Length: 143
Image (tube, rainbow, N blue to C red):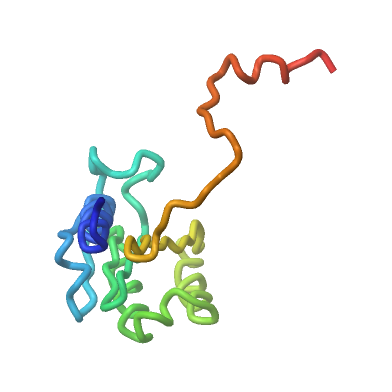
């Protein structure tokens, strides 16, 4: 079984690829700005480069930005405490700043890592199986 530390390290490594930074950047106390760019190992659904991608693991913010937005984002992440940069009404400030570039805040998500010390196997009376395309054929009728 993996440890909490291994899970955190892997999550930070993937976030670093996505944000074009180093995993160590997420544990610094000062905020960091890097430039967003395409990365072959980034999550496939990300359309890189991004105008602004803010990531925090709790101690700071790593902002992966387009060069033209560096000053705007730097001002924002230095104005508010880390935890308040990800909530309203402060996000409205960032949204308003990006409005002059015809951009808006979107695709906000919070991700939580499991704590392996409290995970336990639960009994389940339901049969679990992986469904393939052919398993859905009966659902497609002329109606």
